[in-house]
Image (cartoon, rainbow, N blue to C red; front, side):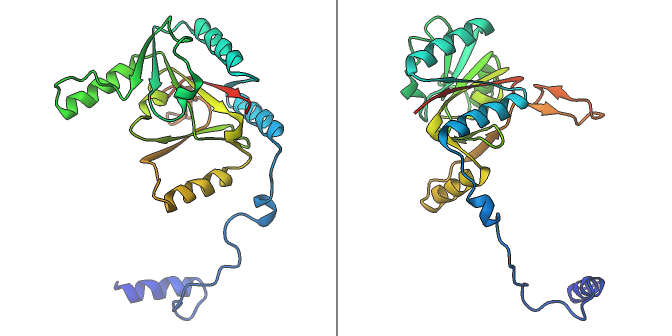
Length: 236
């Protein structure tokens, strides 16, 4: 069957005498206006994000000051008792000033430079081994979505996805100003970045702990990613 006959057959099945010569007009594109106008005040965004993440099996706490967040992070880490903590070296994590908080634990920072004189392939394998051996990964984020409880991270040279993907526990530090009401708001800002040439190599929407039911619909947590996700939200 040639191409013309193929499309004619489809047209007949759709009740048309011939294939369309031009794309049909679309009277609705994107989300409805009422949904695009849907916005929550900041405190409601914070509360909804925390609630939705909790429904997914994650855990969120909110802090009024950086000092309080430091104490909260220290408490969480002492409860977890990690042998090694992975950190991102890029993005906005440095602004959270974690050096003193993390002084009592072994840490490894992305990008990891411990590959020495290894080949590129061997060095990559070493990076994955090191971060897979970390019990906790700590990152910042670019956005969070209140409606879905999602944490959004744009990958770059200083923020490899291994830090949030390989350790058993992912702790994300979030500023309340980064929380958006809807997924569409984040996607619009991503599109704006792309237009200005700032598209990341990868964009990851982390929506609760890793879940998989691909074997006989048996739900398993933590197979393809962290078994626990903790969000520490700093107001401001």
